[in-house]
Image (cartoon, one colour):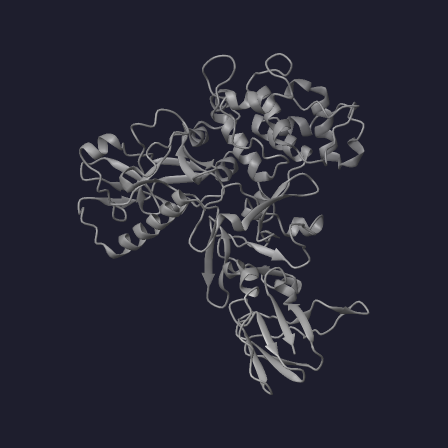
Length: 543
């Protein structure tokens, strides 16, 4: 993290501590909850996303979207799904036999109506089960707005042209997930048609595809996230103007008045739309002493800066060491009794690791991925004990992206229906929550502890997902008793193999249970805990 980010993080921490300790002096100010909806909630209320058996959950939004699924969602948005399903034409794409009857009918309808934009992938094929890309989906959304490929834009330039029309939320996302479809679809509904001044949503209301009261959803003011190489991820309004917080503000109250409020205009919207990665409950509203309302984020009143002239300007960053951009980390630390601390997304949905994964490589595909949807976000910022550099991105075999933590690919569990659910914990002894202490384990292991005295039986606690003495020196003939202090099963497994099997391996043992290993021969023995192999490791030096 650079010095500027360190300063921002430390000041934000100080602000939160100060806010917790300070009374709110502006007695006239009150707080309230605005109407805040995520992209997915808007898409669901419009009927575009219907989810699976569990509804439009974080797991559903993380699932890969196939071309036929994206086409169906597109037809649903246009009010044409039932028309397509009732179509009786016989001409179809060459690969229609790869899908069921209803999808086959939809493909036939799309082939008969090329103006909708779903013209296939060449050589008479539609590739219905392949993933849909950002380029492909923006291409059909542009055509829904009245623009035509090869007349208004080229296929190769679809993403750049989409950006010029205000469609950028999934640009460079590559292969898409259901959450991307929600973002791009709602984005397109707000965009103006090529002909006239109406938005796509307004035209669909006139066509009685969308109810007028539902169309109001797409008029919500949007708070988005901007990624910056120096500042990390931070909040901006729907015009791209940076949002700031003031370190002198107490929680849920503003200390910025008079000339200060002229230089730092307050940000307010009573109806807000945010990314599906964000937590709607983080936003609130205060009524200022002057009677004006102001939007808050995690209790911080939000402002713009008068000298920021265009989208992307951050001229207010660090002004008087009191004004800073509002960082947005898409991963945070959650905790529960019996589980301890673990990683979750910004909305509180639990993230998991798969012990069969190797460093930077996922082994979860097919049915596994259906049950354990991947997590991906390009919005990373330092948050508490989490460091930006601990997160990375891999590209999966199907072209979709997945976020990693210390090299471990991250997943949701399909049965976790709401924030705080941890139903995936310990499933099949290969799926586990991820403690934040997983970071920096390698650095700890590189620092040997003092040599223990001779002739003793040694004790090694397992606590907070770590071996308390990552490296220990003992004498030949000595024993080590491992005692599990976590409310979760662990074991001890040798890295060395003999005839394809670990040199030593304990069974999984639970909280309060112990297992003893004796080492007769000198040497160095590295080992790990199988359920948490990516970060629970140790070394025993036998003299």
